Each structure stands twice: as C-alpha cells, then as structure tokens.
Length: 391
Ligand code: AMP
Ligand code: MG
Image 1: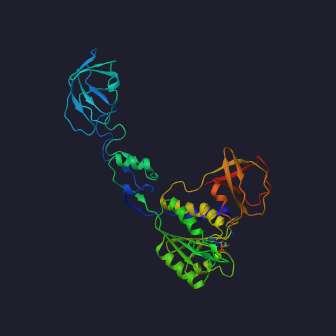
Image 2: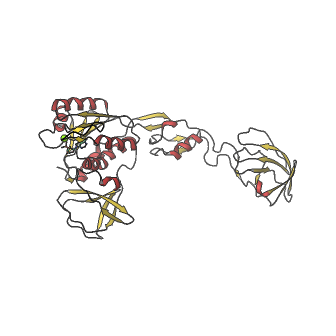
C-alpha cells in the first residue's frame, strides 16, 4: 500500500500528452493548443472607424467641412479627402487614407447635404483604430498550452486562423462490473442496484470535452470480465473500470487485468475513501480499477484520473488547487488513513458535509472541495487550519 503523495507522483510520472492533431477551428472548443497560432492578417486589417460619424481631413482652426460621400462597414473604396473635407462614416468602416480624425455624429451639426460643422475641435487620429493595432500579420497570437475557450476561438477566427494544432483527446472506455447492477430503464428488482457509475464517469468525461466514450457492462464472472477488458484495452487510450477491484470472492478485475499482461503501477492507497484503487498500463493504454462505491469512484476520479486526462489533453496545470482554510466546527477524525472529506468552502471557511460514506454520492452534489486530512490526523477543533483541495 502506498501513500497519496506516492500515488500522485506515479500518475504524474506516467501521464503523457495525446498526439498532436490538426482540426478545424470550428471544432476546437475545449482543446489545448499544441503549436503557436500565427495571425494570417493584420487586425484590424485597415484603419477602422470606431464610431458612427464623420471622417475628416483636419483643416486647423476651421469648423466647417465639405461632405464628400459615405462609407459603410464592409465598403471597399478609394476616397481621398483634402484638408477641409469630410465623409460620412460608420463603425467598422475603412477610414480614407488622408483622413486623420473621426468625429462622432453627436458632435457634428449637419448644415445641409454638402456641409457639416464641428461642435469641438478634433484631435488627430481620434476614433480611428490603427491598422494592426491588436496584432500584425505573421505575429504569434496564441501560445502553446492555451486552453481554447470561446474568446480564444473568436480571436483566432478574427485573425484568419481556420485550423489549429491541438492535443488530441483520449478515447475512453468505462467498464462497469457487478452482477447486482441493473439499468435505470428497467423496473426495480429485489437485491439489485441501479447502475449509476457510468453516468457519473461519463458526465465527468464530457465536462472535459471527451466525446469518444464507450460504456461496457459485465457481470461478476472471470472469463466475461477478462474478455470485456481485453476488448476495451485493445481500442482505448484510457479504460476506467468500476467495481470488482477489491478482495471479495467475486472481484475479478485485478486477476483479469493481470492475465492480460497489464503492468501494475500501483494498487491500494492509504486513503479513505478509495483504498483499493488500481492503476496500470496495458501496452499503450492506461487502466484504472476504481472502487465501485460511487463516492469512492468519484474521489479517485478527481484525485488520480483527472490529472492523467488533463495531461493527455495538454493542460499545463493538471492538479486540483489546494489551499489552507479554517474549519467552521469541531470534527472527530476516525481512522488512520489519509482522508478526503467532502466539504463546502464558503469565503475563508470550510465545512464538512453530512453523508461521508463511500456508498453515498449525495454529498458531492453541493460539495466544492475536499478537506484533506493526512494519515494519523487527530481530532479537529473549530478554526483549526486544514488543507483544502478544490474541485
Ligand atoms: P465493488 O467495488 O464492486 O465491491 O462495489 C462496491 C459497492 O459499490 C457495492 O455496494 C456495489 O453495489 C456498488 N457499485 C458498484 N458498481 C456500481 C455502479 N456502477 N453503480 C452503482 N453502484 C455500484
Ligand atoms: Mg462488485
């Protein structure tokens, strides 16, 4: 049995980035950039009006200008203004070469069809966005390891980038074991349990933008477990097995993985919940044997599976954030293993939730953090400083 810290080190030591692939920008939400993106154009591509108003070529000490025409957003034109001339212009339109100010329409009096007067003297280059103000053609605009959020996609499109090199996402199988498990769309049967880990794990994977997910279900039978795992391992980058990894007579996952030549990287961590977690590698596929109890499975997912997946997807920061906060109440610590207590952080305080049992997922609905208690922790007193892991 290893410590939480050792397990995390083993995860980190084995985690790898996914292959670099080229994808259309329209599909790139939630991917992480693997290669620098280069602007294909100047942005803005031309001197651009920032206002609805009048572009002018300033004639010092004169407030009346001769109106020459109109330029709308999107117009291509070759207007050149002489000093003392103006042109009607709108936001986003290209400013004539010799214009050196745009006056907003609220500061202009329209005298007649061919003349305007200015209410205040213009300042040179006012309300004109210089060509290339945001970035210039060939410039490195978004750096590797950037998470492609909506703003990043918008920026890249605005500068003409239609394809990006990103880290691929893993293909993941969820293998659910347990003869007691029934599907939610069947009437309840005595002695059975509604199978809820697949929706739990799949939903977490979807949050990471992982879409290639296969769910396989198998009864507690050695041969069937072996066959299902073999199939899952042969075509997936990561296999998450739920249940069957403990020491019961009908827990076949460990034995089946071993017989398939899986290399054990660790098995069993001095922690509560989630003691029987297994982590291994089969050829190039990673496999986690997660405990079947839903809260244990999710704890192990957040602490150990998530960093591996984040590394694969290309995140630079793969671990959950930690900080120290004071606990809002006394708490009796039971047991000597390290513990992850589901908790709520509010402001500078943290409160342990009810229903800490590893069989109960409900506390996770409102929890936003673990209180992490190292091995051999003792009783906690209100206002004690505790380590908190945010998720
Ligand atoms: P195991 O790790 O297979 O010994 O399972 C531990 C506990 O978790 C048992 O009470 C199982 O019924 C429950 N369990 C295992 N897998 C699931 C699942 N997919 N959905 C809901 N409960 C499960
Ligand atoms: Mg089981």
